[in-house]
Length: 272
Image (cartoon, rainbow, N blue to C red; front, side, top):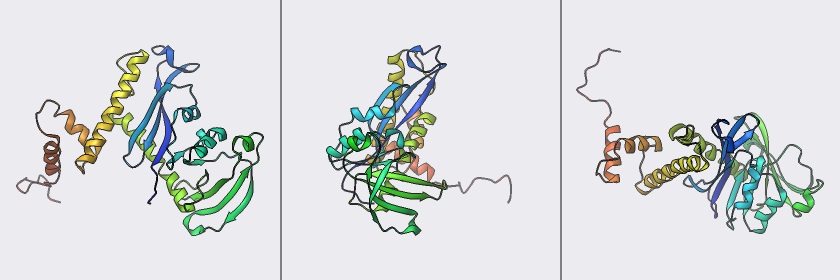
């Protein structure tokens, strides 16, 4: 899929905390949490914007902090539905692909033919007809409905891009899950579940260290064209922190060990 602009995925993840130890991060009545709002460049994938807030901050407010890049694509879930903020992206000459809510009120203006064998169900130009949505977003939107065979569900997507194909719009939204994989990876392999300090600064510092660790490894992997996974690189660096070896040589040696296969002189305990 070749696009002229950069493709970003915007999402957030919640890190649960103990309310007794972190009273400043109260999320619900008996629960504390912080949110990690991330704008992920899907080409890396590398986070380009990271904003840490308390769990009470709604995801849609992060749109106010973004500086939209003209020609770029912003892929979002329906938690970011705010037509006034989406119209600001339109005015900035940026594109968005967002999942629509079930109570979407609209009027069909035009329908384009689709190939239903690809999973597409409709490709329409629509006008919003809600109470305030016509004022918040006064121009037409594109409504693409697609069937997700893996999850056995229909997805309704809204976008302000009328140039690319409906298949491309659906594919762009599928790539949004890469930001979910980013959150899953840093939670599993980096220390942002248990914290050494209980202050705001301690929590944010530890999260920022984890994000910086991920970014540095992603940059090294891309710079030296390393085939090993980020997790493998993390393991290599963790046991080689005090070795005076060039990064390229260190990673090359690790890849050579992985490619040795089974030693020929190794005795077998069992004959299968």
